[in-house]
Length: 151
Image (cartoon, rainbow, N blue to C red):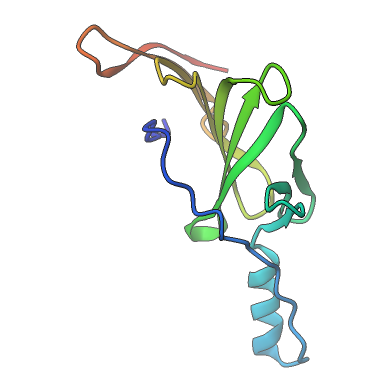
C-alpha cells in the first residue's frame, strides 16, 4: 500500500518550473544527460503564472481546465513525478476534491489519492499492486482505514 501525507494546505513553491534540457553536444555524456533530462516533467505556465499543462514521460500530458487546477508539480527521486490537482464543481467555485497523482518516468500512473478538501475522507489507490483503501477521520481525529480491496 502507498502511504500519503494528507496534511493540506501546505505552502506551495510557485516558482518551481521544471524545464526539459536538451543536450547540445554529440558526446556520450551529453547523450546520457539528455536522456535523464527527457525524464524530467515539463511544466507549461500561462501568462498569469498558473500551470496550464504538465508533460510527463514521452506521452502523458495533464492539462488544467476551468474545473481542474494543477496546483503543484514535484520532481521526486527515481524519475517519479507527483502532481497535485484541485477540482471544483464550478469555475472559480470552492474545491470539491484534492488529488495527488504519482507517475513514473514513463508517464504511467502508479498511485493516487483522492480526498475531500477538509481531509475527512480519502481514497488511496496503488496501481502497481492493484490495491485500494478508503480512509476516514475517527472520533479521536486520527485517519483510519475503513475499507480495503483489490481491483
